Image 1 (tube, rainbow, N blue to C red):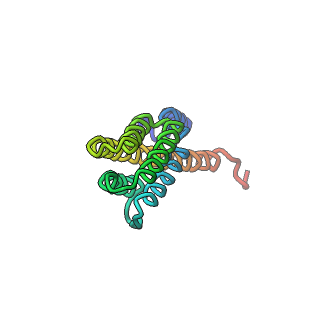
Image 2 (cartoon, rainbow, N blue to C red; image 1 turned 180 degrees about the vertical axis):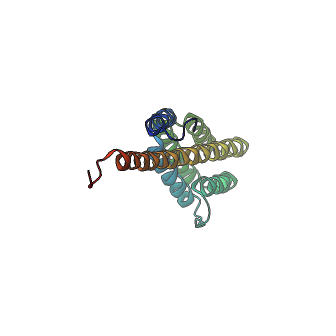
Image 3 (cartoon, helix red, strand yellow; image 1 turned 60 degrees about the vertical axis):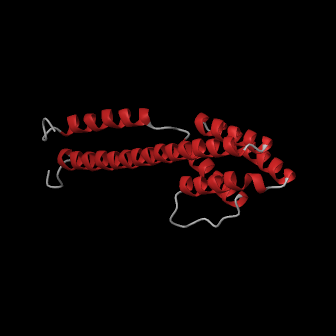
Length: 173
């Protein structure tokens, strides 16, 4: 913007900005999104709830976690142990995608399910819901970053096309 007539400088500015944004991009964002979607679906299934079409993955998963924590005391021992195993597997998947806070909260919920501790289950459920909300916000930030990168690439192409237009020989030459 300092020199709006200098196309080469504008292209260099866009390149620097693109590089700075790429440094902030998380290469695991797609796997984290897939994990969050799968987690929400599995939790909804475990809680035997229908997912609202308007709910985000984090909201659906949080609702399911709350229902599971509330129902935990009512579950027969075998079902509670199966729930604990499922939650432990989800914790492992969350850990593999790099979400340590979600992994820890799900592991704590798994332990609470295994021991039948309703109070610990409620606390772990709330922690997991908070971790899910944070994960959803981080993914939304990454998606906005990807949109900004795409816009930068489009802007660079438009400037490059303009530069070619003004530097190419005229057909009359």
